[in-house]
Length: 194
Image (tube, rainbow, N blue to C red):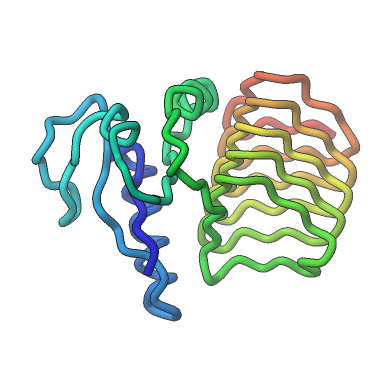
């Protein structure tokens, strides 16, 4: 089993912990060492796992470790990725067992992505690095989601849409045409672009 640390012990960090447990229930692969979180006290217990320290804890490790940056806000996720300089760190893409990828031969994903429960990706889709696809998000063919973007629960991104770097697409939003969302935009929950 591969050691993994979750960055962020808040709500999304706890969701990632559940995702890892669900993956391990099918094929044991992950040994969760705990959380790191600059806003928590080292030694604090979160959902049965210890807060090991702040982000700097990761930079001090002398052995290979996987890291998941489980922070919803794109700008914070990017800042943390830039703060981690340890060459022993790997960023796996984590995929919940319920995720549907229609044709994984034609779906590209960068490092450090998280695909949560009941996410659907069809074909010819590209995800950059550190993209979060939250519960029940649907991405249709020829869409591009650039690095550090967060797609919240229930979002539907249609054919050919392009989501720029660091975008935050709010819960239940719908992009129903091949629209280009410029980098670092935040779309409120329920936004409809038709």
